[in-house]
Image (cartoon, rainbow, N blue to C red):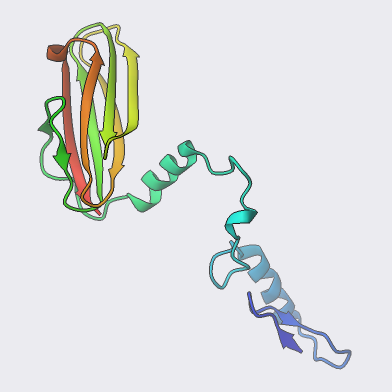
Length: 165
């Protein structure tokens, strides 16, 4: 009898190997629980992931749920940030924002991290005081800011909280 190297499955490879129903049941339980993580099956190489199998939406959802479910609370109260005023993160940081629009109008707001656009909010508000939550990641030491391209600056309030990861 042998044991498989990746998942520890028992292999009865000789006719005289003692067969055990419990060991067979244990093999099937390991197969059922395998998820291709270390010790639970062969790791999937990058080449084994189909193009478009991992989308930005899937990553956003998964990162928000798992990696960035903060173990530390966001910084105290909401901080208002005026447009085009960069904020530099001291470490890897998750930023949660609320964009409030105080009047019915069309807005276009861009969030930039390290010179690259990470979020673009295009909206036409139909009532006063509409709220748009946005969350984004800032790498270690990165600077971020927001710009309003369409809309009235006085009608847009941008507040944020952060979690250093």
